[in-house]
Length: 149
Image (cartoon, rainbow, N blue to C red; front, top):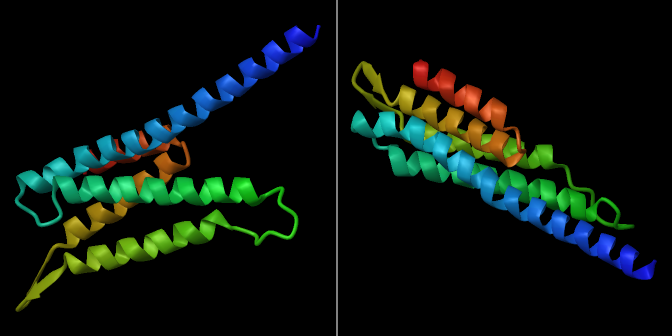
């Protein structure tokens, strides 16, 4: 009986390990792939925030979101621990995306350039956040819509 219980516990631990590590690989990977789809268009247009930049934005936002969520889960049962609110991290990410987007906007005389690139940075960041939360359907639908637009 003890051997069966031990075996069942080992199986649970192994499955939890595999599930956790699959998420660690899959969430940033999907974020990078979605960002690559959107960044490719910017790259072919010769824009400053092209393929690599968009992929890094997608990766960064996914990792920040995952780290915030993991920290919140780890500290949830710790007595006396500081409360962590992942939505505050997401708000910080959005602020950073605004800063990156603003850097791509250039005013030359009466014309303004870079607005579409700035909007793409924002969308890629949102897709990265969705991936970091494990919401792949939202990320894929948003990528599809942004590609069509």
